[in-house]
Image (cartoon, rainbow, N blue to C red; front, side):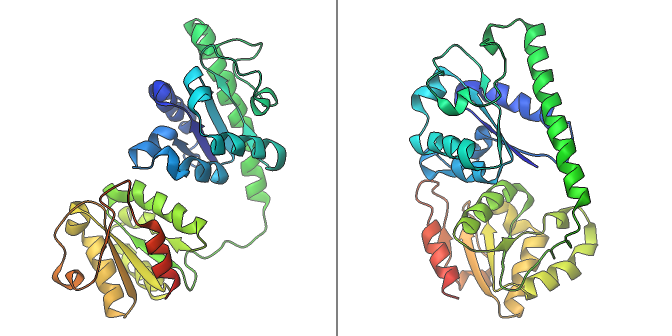
Length: 286
C-alpha cells in the first residue's frame, strides 16, 4: 500500500514525523512526502506530485493557508478527480486556520481533526489524540488491504519481463532511480531495478544475469558512487558483453570507464533541464 503526504515547506518537519510514525505500522507501507520529491530534484512544474498521487492508495494533504494559496491547479484538479472517480482515500489534515470550506474535495473527505477544529490550535494531548485516530484509521484500512492481498489467487508476476529496460544505479542514487522509473512508466516504458541485490551479498549475479539478458536496454545512472560500485560496473559490463543497448546518464559529474566514454551520455546534472523526453524517444527507437 502506498501513501502520499502532500504539503508545503512550512510543514516539512510535521510531514516527516508523520511519515515516520505511519511507517512503524508495517514495513510494507510505502510512504512519500512532498519533501522527498523536492529533495530528489523535482519541482512543482514537473507534475511529479500528480504522478505520485496516481500511484498512491491513501493521500494525506496537510492543509495550510500556504497550501491553498499557492497549490498548482493541476494538482488540485487531481484531488477532485480522485474524489469523483478513483478508488483512493483522502485524509486532509487542517493544520492551521484557513478558509477551506469552498474546496469540495476537502469538504467531502474524512477530515482530521474533526468538528472544524484546527490542529495547530490544539494542545499537545489533543494533537496526539488526532494523530492516534489517523494512525488507527490507516491500520484498519491496511489490515483490510492485506486480507484482500492474501486472498488473491492470481499468480505472482515474474520480476523481469522480455522487453523491459533495466536501471542500474548505486545505493545512494536509489531515490532518483525510483523517480526515473516512474517517469518512464508514465511514458509507456516498462523498467525494473533489482533493489534486493544490495542486501543479498554474492547471490545476486545469477538473477541479474537473467534479468539483463531479457532486457532490451540498460540505463546506467552515473555518479561518483556509481563509478566506484562493483554492482553498477558488473551490470553495464555484462550488458556490454551481451550486446544490449546501454544508455549512460550523468546524474552527478564523474569520470567514466574508458568503455563508457565511447558512448554518448545524457547530461542529467542540471535538475531543471534534464532531457527526459530525449531519453524516452531514444528508448522507443530501439
